[in-house]
Length: 322
Length: 228
Image (cartoon, rainbow over all chains, first blue to last red; front, top):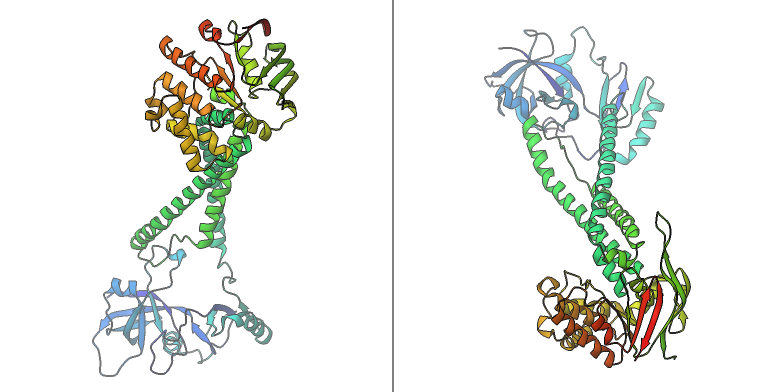
């Protein structure tokens, strides 16, 4: 049996009789603290370390071993079912192992940085993790911890808590979510990339829209000319054409949004299937939708006004004679 | 109100061209009175259509004064001039200029709609006018489904939609055969007989001969005027 490295996320303070992770509340705001060396205590809810899956499934025994949750992908890869017992080690293959019982699977939090990598996460009680990973020579309570994530019951108290930790605990740095060193760099780059693509797309669409509008308005030269000859004032025609342009641009924007919303599910389904992840790849938010409609309508109005104004400067007879 | 509808005093119209200005109408003085029937004839390029366009407020003189109902047209803005064209002047063109996407009745309704007539009123008026020009059975046909003569009669009906005081016709029979031209000429005579002042620009001596006043133009000026 080959040994397998797994990453374990371990919830702490599991209520009596609860299972690992049961204290996790997705509504609370996570928080990162960094301390060089210190005591893992208080409201620690999760941390990461490396453990070794020393043997896959072992026969169930009379005495109940500690319970763990394993990532859905890991369960599928290793063929582990709920109720199975596994042996884990944090050392080299063959080193001391501990036996655990799988009491469930969980869906790992999607991480774009691990796209295409099957999650091999395990969640266990903090005490079990410490027992599994502690060097026998290291006294209990002096384990080295790089960082811990803290979830607060009251997310609104995040700022106060950060300030409090930074003021009271020497050598510990409490940071807001996303402030951990390098945590958001990748996404900043991605966001800039998206912004660049969006800008280029809008510029190209504007040029296209303007050209299309000029062509459409130009096709109506004769009609506009006849209306002018009959006695329609220029501003009346301009308003009419503007309304048409805005309605068309709005309808186009709504159609584009409907298409985006419809394809959103399809794109997410395909890539979630392709990379076996719950990551959301496309999400049309109300803000994005509103921005799209606002940009489209304004562009449509400007393009129509520009094209129409040039047309209406010509005399009705010249337009009608075309 | 004066009997004179439109009064042109020493009007000229020059067009700026890359090769230099071309004077189409030169120092013309002309008045059209209520109920008058006038024809302007002359060789191609003599300026008769340009003069007609100025009389109809479609074009503006480069110099001189053009008054409609005593008001100097040059002082009117686009909105006022458009209102004048809409309510006081009817225009009939050689090439009809009907809107192809509208039926005959809808084409006749269009100026009334812009003038603010209620839908049922303008519908009734359109049918009445199409009956007047003998095309009530073609009310729902589009221009593409009409013959040239029928299209011109619809154009005349449209020009009369808002009961104008002055009807201007620019080569109204220019694209019609002789028989159809005769029908249109008779219709225009009838319009004039019903009280609308009529000015026709034509090459056709027969059509010009039906007018009580015939103006002959040459080189942008009125060379001859005959009143019967």
